[in-house]
Length: 254
Image (cartoon, rainbow, N blue to C red):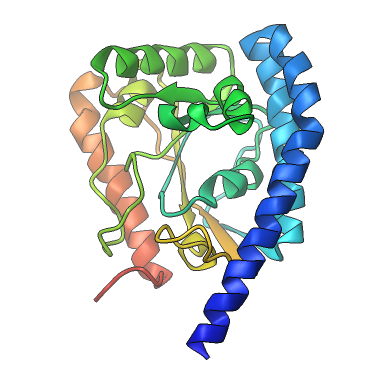
């Protein structure tokens, strides 16, 4: 039975990947045109295309989104969104998870080297090379610039996939420093099922099913200073950790 499941997931993954590439090729000429209109107007339109792309791929892949609101969410408010990072599926799910029309994601710089996809990627995300101090500093300045223009930002404070079998990896400071410097509230969101839909161990493990997204209560930063980075980070970490334990996510080894 396990062998048959593995075969199904492999062929299913290839099927969805072909659709992924086909839709990318379809919208690529529009992305080229949009990129000529700059990081704000052009980037905003590219994000609209990416949302269509994610809707199509998730639908054709039999993946449906279920949203769980633990607190009211102001869809018109600007946030620093933070999420737990577990899967290559995180990005298309993020496109459906973030309720604001325009936002920017902080992403790994190495993905911009992928042919065709890399062009869309570098025009849509704020890329960061964590091994380069100057590049990290530049990406932080870009994040703050978008926030000042009224555009929300999205970061994974874990930086890379959580492969620890704990609820979360340790957090980097970046998201919390940006939130404090710009006095922007933090909105923690949890991905409960991406690990089960597409495991980080193999791109051929995709399978259809639900992807639950939990919106936790926003964390205000009013009156806090840069001296409070550690306190803020620990507060958000604890809130997200408790949420993942509460929903009994599958990757936690007890």
